[in-house]
Length: 129
Image: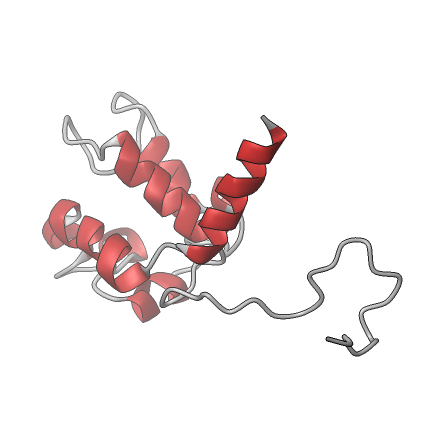
């Protein structure tokens, strides 16, 4: 079972969530004139820059993000988004959460930087192939 978890983590690094092709379409299809044509509540979801400048996303931490809080509220709670009976699917919510947790990047990143060896004494040493 541990091997399966390891494989899933590796797949997550290889296939990161892409804002433009996966997240923005969710906003375009579900956030209507409230947050696309207008900036209701100070939130404009028409593009990445507007979203990130709103302060509603804490990159790397979906649970601390106002956006995530609003899309996961029960439809009977005040401030649920989208309001009323229209809700995002669990798959859409999970995708947004994954994007935020991956760092809320403007585009998919497959770059791995820094020291990736958890057993290294120091990451300053050059790797001898």
